[in-house]
Length: 168
Image 1 (cartoon, rainbow, N blue to C red):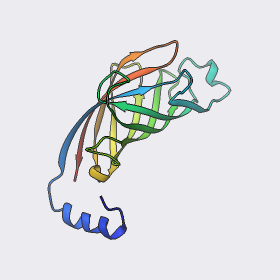
Image 2: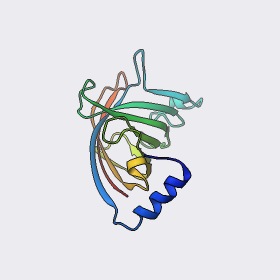
Image 3: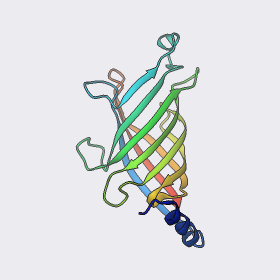
């Protein structure tokens, strides 16, 4: 897909006359906190964070792999790249702001931008899809998350994502 200003302007003129498409996506995020190659790394820890049962004040960068199945060796479909911050004094809840960067054939190079509160210990959580690029230009929608596995000792988790997106 062309990305120069004129081609994008032409894209808007052509596509905004049509109804949006609906795309359903299903994948698994592998959040790796421990081991030799973590994909979730703390970048800010306040003095009181270590004393907080909710890790309040923690800010971390993520570059988590996304796969088609829950097995870490299943087909890679992309990466979740962005930031999270522990923002609740009452429960383990993260404010998340990140991009889903697709690397699979169908959506390669396209992105979805996800933002919202993630109360990690709830069975289901919903985050907002607030934008996108490439195939997902002008995206909006919802991502429903469910933790499949969480190891409290290592901090590693596998989270299932069901995403419904309107886009042009």
